[in-house]
Length: 304
Image (cartoon, rainbow, N blue to C red; front, side, top):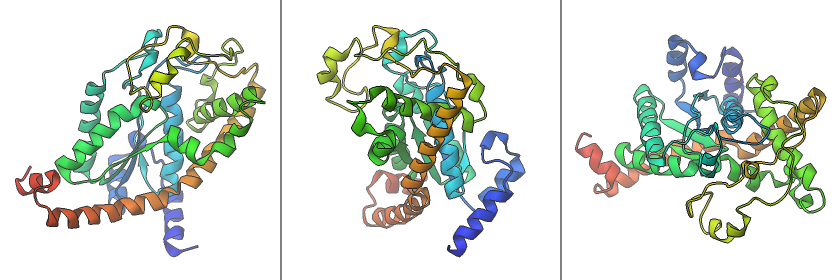
């Protein structure tokens, strides 16, 4: 173990909380004297079968908390209202336009930067979130010259954790695979201290094709809801949910899901990610010096 890892561990033990909204102003000041990293989970509030409407927000926050612990970062929670997508046909779904979300998230990013958070990592377990986050962070870089990052948790899960979901058994044991996927949501609620918010119900387990399945060839022409406009015709389209008949099953799923989340965070190697962000910032400064007409370099020269 390196000295920096020991130091990081000491800081983790001494921090009362890593969730920004639960900290004192003085605690944030003390943190910013030694580091500049904040994890920002971007969520949604939308119909999701037998899971609460905010489940994709909660699981994003839970993964973000584990990431923050791994790299000595803070966590900004409480961002559940952005573009939902095809679930807008469901009661309870809060649909915010992509453009409105970009403006709101950009205002948050600029506020965090002014305070000293130079390394901002935006994450989401909500597939269409990329349509809000990616344009924001590219414009943010051109405006400020500060590279902030988006990590798509759906992509991370399926690129780095296919074995954890046993996806090779999707044809022979689809119910088991679904249970492992839903366990991640259940674990998210436990990590965030809200396990009782997950209802014990078997009502929403109905495996089968979505009503919009005939159009999958269109949907697959771009990434995660970005190809064409549509909404789900049936509430059950989003989504069939594993049966959770009792608290014992719920607890077992929480255990299973927490193992998956912790393995995912370890495989993402978040300390390496934040070091790369620091190195990229230096690389960008060198690039700006060579090409002063770059938007970021130009804006700095104009004092914007």
